[in-house]
Length: 320
Image (tube, rainbow, N blue to C red; front, side, top):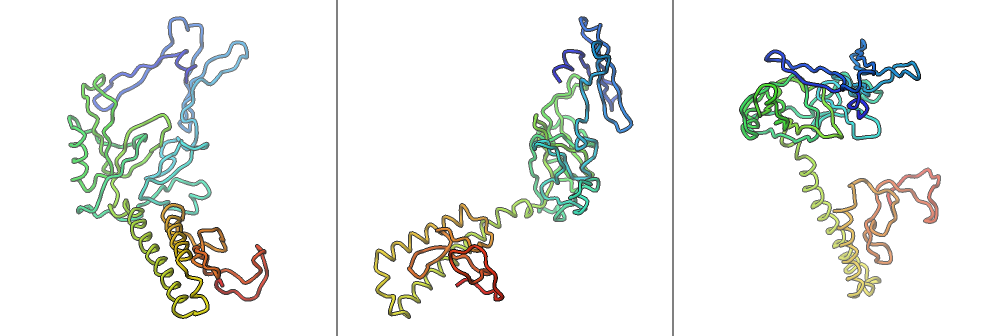
């Protein structure tokens, strides 16, 4: 891009009320250069410079640089994510691929659909997506503040998104504000690594808070269940197994309590709430035969020696 700027310059001009156009030229000291612009049948723009030494046209600038950046390549409600090593299509938050099989093999044209239908009557919220190339087919509302722009979209159930662009258009139309709203399908979006606009998309409020609700509900339930198991196990050992009563002296009880605390800390901070199968780390078993506190693996383990990682057996049972 630096070589492009050193060879040519671009200027934006106002056309009619609904369009602007761009022209380019060469600096005075660059008249010896031969520059041409080429648009192929796929819509790719190439700006080329003639290399006199090699007698070939050298590409100064190509847009789009990747097929993911082509117009509407990711389909409705899909966007091209340029943050990875290779640009790829993704769905907006609150959306999922319409064609799962096609999405897996790189066919993104059908785009994405909502996971949950909008309710509009107070059940929707707006999610901020920063650094976005704004979608096509927007409606420009003049002379609006940011809050007024948000309100314009919030009260209109057909408004799917809004943006308050920070780039002024005063040089073109004399208007400093850029309140943009979308009342139809969102298409032709990108996540840019060089910065972009904040796009606010309408989603279902429950869908936006689903992850928070899951954490708030599951962790207390798991913690309570773990504590109940520990208390029940200790009660069983104390009142029903006379041979092990002497093992539960106060130092042992204190060690058990510390183990429970480590287990709760593991659940809250480290666990992904997946089933733990033959994961015999120190924090994974409630209490073993020696009264050592751990969080147990459970469910689908097989019987074989403790020093083996694999074995063959015809009987599948729970953990012992």
